[in-house]
Length: 246
Image 1 (cartoon, rainbow, N blue to C red):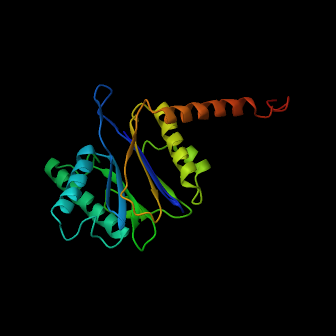
Image 2: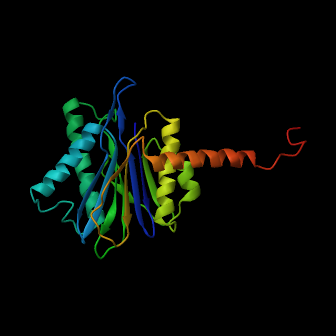
């Protein structure tokens, strides 16, 4: 399993993905699930995935090959991020269909992968899309400013309670890290390291991925502070009335 999340906010975007994959408790590996693309001063794009590792890697490879071979249509030439999302969706559907045909299996979902694509092209607003295995996509909005993939249930309450479209990037990044900390604590299929990107709107800087490892001091401090704060808040809650349970 995996956990990925992306925030599309007024001031920019925050992306994070864990790197753990597993095929049972005795086969756990680390694989990159986030890739970045861009042209300095012109566009910045981040792509994340959860699902079939083979399908995801095939999509990333095909996208990178199109850029390397200077294909007419690639992530560095599309006119809009919606065009980029459609390109990825078409590629996902094509790869899954081919795999299903070869395996003579179109019902198990073995080859399914879901993607999140976000970023900004000069002259346009930041945008964030969820791209489904069927090839279609939806766009995040001010009312729904974040998407999640994979093992999302443990980290979702933190984002639900703390993140809105107007939150600043600093606190959004902290909320994202705590969302991952809670998920890792509650689900062994999600694990370190975490790949994370913060993109400031209208900066058009090539996105760089920060890898947060188990020995990261700030992440450890944030986790401990959050745990202590929750414990202290619990101890400080108002007492219930004496007849409350009667």
